[in-house]
Length: 95
Image (cartoon, rainbow, N blue to C red; front, side):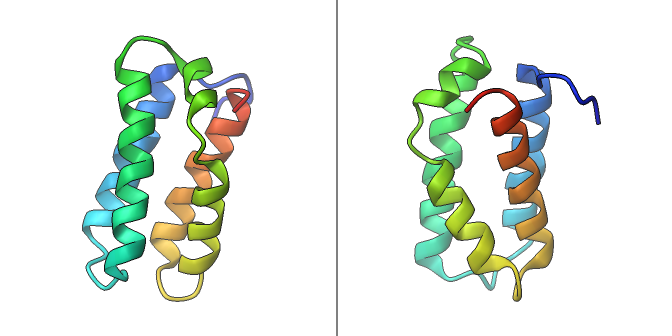
């Protein structure tokens, strides 16, 4: 992966992989799945608005994503890994 600041396309691709991982993980507790979908939808909406990665900084969701990644670590490592990748891209974008 490029070590520079991620662009909107990289964030969008990572977000898509995260949505796919979530869809393939049906055993996730429904409340966690709902929270994750809400956070991802907020970030996707910001990215889709053309506002770019800097707009994602206004989404109050990184701590929620990190908490979910920790929660999924043991039972859903693929989902946790995708989530951590996305968090790192957000950090790289200055979020």
